Length: 162
Image (cartoon, rainbow, N blue to C red; front, side):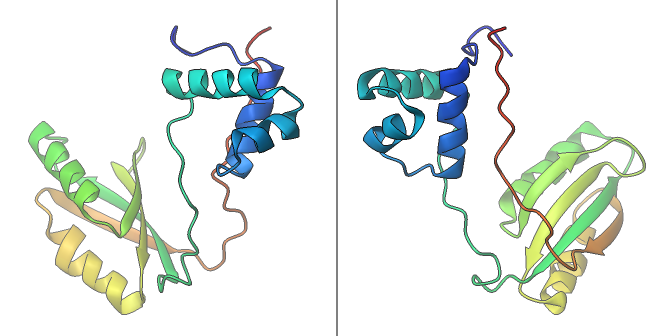
């Protein structure tokens, strides 16, 4: 942790765990849930937000109900690790809404993308008319998710206060 991040004590741990489960909790509900009075709870949440430890709040959407039942994990290799090509690739990834995650990787590929699509045909279009035509893309290998066993955005929260 950096110097601007507060030590995570038991109260911080309980706040972070509760907000990861339900980011819509009011301060009153949160304080009741973790057994703390409202004012200190509010101050702690604001401090966690101010430090950047709480980076934001979002709604989790149902991918299938949105008409995006296909999930593919795509390994991408780019030419010669050229900085210009890498920056261009990252810009294109950021601009493509169907790429919902991108990780720079060690090993045989340079990037791992998580791509959602309306159908296999839609994924094929995203691949062949999109990703494979991006400058510098040398190779792409896709694997499809058959079933989601666990999907959890909550992080384990450990105390750091000793």
